[in-house]
Length: 261
Ligand SMILES: O=C(O)[C@H](O)[C@@H](O)[C@H](O)[C@H](O)COP(=O)(O)O
Image 1: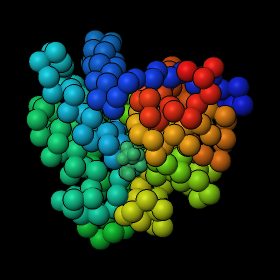
Image 2 (image 1 turned 90 degrees about the vertical axis):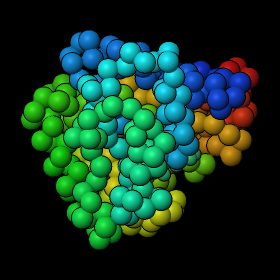
Image 3 (image 1 turned 120 degrees about the vertical axis):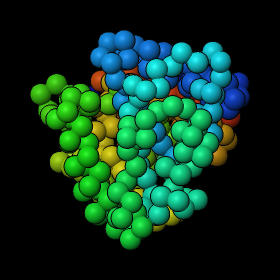
Image 4 (image 1 turned 30 degrees about the horizontal axis):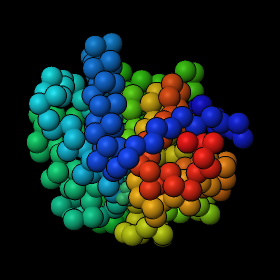
């Protein structure tokens, strides 16, 4: 995995508004989709929950009509372990707001196992999701990161919470230290609902491209800590193989030192 360090340079772009961030994220996603579909015939994209679910709607515009949706393979970097038709499910939220509007084959959309989800079995859901990813690596749909054998996704669209969590890797929780598994789980998430699965840090940082989109005053303290290398915040450890970039609105960037802007 691309490793983070005290001199990790964090690329960032600061936009006036949340709407500008969402539009820029759509453009970044469209361009990478074109690149990977042309290069290898597939595009593996990993989504988060939260505000991102609504921002994805910016892809549903005529400007991006030529997107090769049939070549997309969609995953989640974390997911709440609730029934797939539950309002808190990232899968359901994304299906209702975005996936139902685009012709991505259902078989290319990888939700967590519905039985584990219905039972609230977080450990089982993590195990089954990891098996699904390994199967797709064997089918050469997901690439691998150099010699590590870890899956390398083309693009991950990430968010950060006010405590500096990303995916469902939370400060002070042991999951951030997990290095062997691809997918782990948490049953006492500080952000409700409590049961979640999450990609581990090595998988997140093996991605070719990581876009971290953060908006709002509530995130400004965490953003400032990240850019001061406070590695107690999982988000501060974000890297990528080709590019990790932060898209911030002015409110989220408001506590960065002026020389940082
Ligand atoms: O399932 C989740 O809750 C999300 O994946 C979560 O990790 C999200 O990305 C951050 O909490 C930011 O959420 P907001 O974008 O809503 O601030």
